[in-house]
Length: 159
Image (cartoon, rainbow, N blue to C red; front, side, top):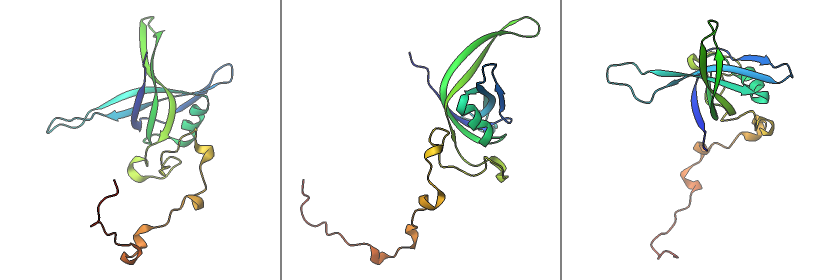
């Protein structure tokens, strides 16, 4: 069977971190995802999805993301049954996150732990991230036309 969800959106509120009785971290949060189509003259609609992250993903999202942060998630869709306060049976649909990634800066340009763009860094490969000095690439816009050689393409191609 195939159950794969990939979604990108903004957090509606700060993630909530809890710990189970056995000491496992679990975070729950909701994201808003704009629909791809808007009728002319109407405002674009958004869908709201509940997300659950476990263990390291839960700690990662609570440490680096806050309300308004753009987040990319891949995971699976799950349902669970529960009874509400009135004793009615309900079904909850939620995305269980497998991977959580930064997707961009926080909306409105305010500063905070999630504001800088991390280039797709996720909790799984954050430990392998290189220091900023190592990642700095040379600027190619500083070159001149003399740095390039003219290739003569008048001959036959070798294939």
